Image 1 (tube, rainbow, N blue to C red):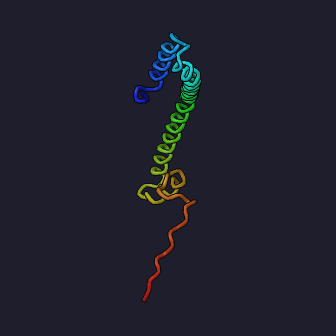
Image 2: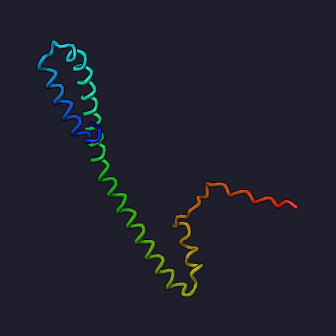
Image 3: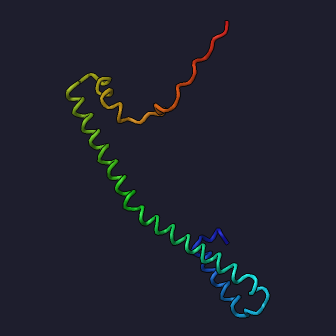
Length: 119
């Protein structure tokens, strides 16, 4: 049932509740209707909250992507201007841009200990 997706799961559980309500005096209906209704209501509420959260985050994520694009564009322009100022000096240009580049190791990570040589 869970492989159908949450919307279809909620729909099926509501259909089961309708079937159980046909004979409310049966022990099966008396036992499972309250449990199933509570679980289905909780699942539907959580699903709706999740959807609302995703919808609210959409504009924020778009803003972040656009900001990153703007920053990268300005860094590209800066690199071009630096190459004009310092032609033939790629190390010097790179030194100005080093703070903006991501590196594979963070400065927060401790440096590995040097290997000990035994004689």
